[in-house]
Amino acid sequence: MPARKVDLPGALPPDLAAGLARIRAELEVPEDFPAAVVAAAEASVAAAVLPELDRTDLELVTIDPPGARDLDQALHLAREGDGYVVSYAIADVAAFVAAGDPVDREAHRRGMTFYAPDRRVPLHPPVLSEGAASLLPDQVRPALLWTLRLDAHGRMTDAEVVRARVRSREQLDYAQAQAEIDGGSPRPSLALLAEVGPWREQRERERGGVSLPLPEQEVVPADDGWRLEFRAPLPVEGWNAQISLLTGMAAAHLMLYGQVGVVRSMPPADPGALRTLRATAKALRISWPAELDYPEFVRSLDPARPAHAAMLNACTLLFRGAGYQAFDGDVPPDPEHSALATDYAHCTAPLRRLVDRYGGEVCLALCAGTPVPAWVREALPALPAEMAAADRRAKRYERAVVDLVEVVLLAPRVGEVFAATVVDVDEERRHGTVVVADPAVEARVTGEGLPLGREIQVRLVSADLTNGAVAFERVG
Image (cartoon, rainbow, N blue to C red; front, side, top):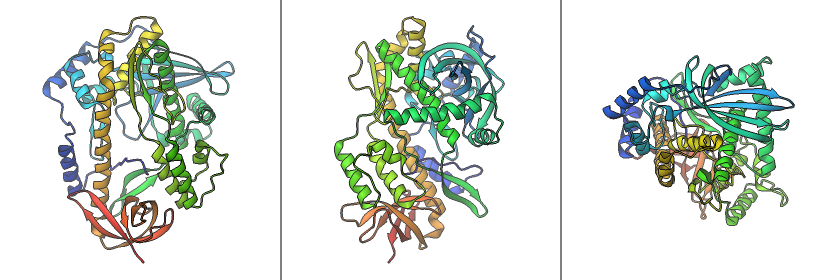
């Protein structure tokens, strides 16, 4: 299915603004920070001390969605012999937040940042997340600076992390970074990112890891108001993500070796689920030779083809069960993240995700050869449950937001007929899910003999603002 993400710049239609407020209230999504939390954050900014190690010489840049202010990561790549050295700066939240202080307690209550078209509900007060702790351009900031060494083919040979002061040179969005690379004369870091990114993607293929190339669903301005569309990611987004994945792998290896920390794991796919996927491929008339393993099969799919898009939607069946495992002295028996086919930890987004602050602190201590701070060890056991609760709320929120946007934009078009592709059906083939290309909508459909992976004509029968549901019926 498309990623549950929407982007809607500018003023919102009144119905949508009211609906988003209702969703936040129903799901108890926290909004304004208590005065004591804001005051504590402001005091921490005034009292913050920069690390002694000065790495402001690194010409770091950030690559993020347009308009982002909570900048967790900044990167710099250079050649080293016949290999590469990646410098990856991560925002140092612990430079401003102390264990048990009001900001820390509120962060544990929230768990992560929540996103909607009209606002960001941040994990930390904006004075930190969009100000003093954010790696904004031309600002000296405290950071956890990872140094990751790679050989000529992108294999990691060494990793370490230290505290340092850094200064990002420029904030780029994805389109700007891609345009600079495609223009033929990019800055050295971006030129090397275009080398290292594909190398890391090749290493992922060799491991048996897989990423589903699913488009994102976005709301964009149109002459008559707004419209929904699916947006395929740019190559630089994948390369940028590979640097974050690389860092997460390094962190997981450090913590597992040190026998203390928290990793992100996913159980192997159930054999029955793979059999179901092979049956789905057969129904969609997509060739899946017996000797072709699942990761290579996924990489052979073209999301622009309706049947292949339906197959990719079905493949999300295997991307379930991810969670966190905390440990202190006993390494978990099954720490691997099966989709990545390696050990992995979240440590690169501490402004937006609670657990990342703790993973970073563990890795700092392990690299320095010092004891892991007591406040970190004490928090580890509760982190998996805290993050699971926050993740469930975030997914419900994202799903409700996208559903509401679809309802608001489609409400005036009830009764119209659209071309749609069937991406899921029940056993009786009377109920299923369709994806409409224009406008870009995914919704429930009813009808007799729904053909999986085929394009059909559907009529919009309802767009209900009260429950945020869109429904279609097959025509003909």
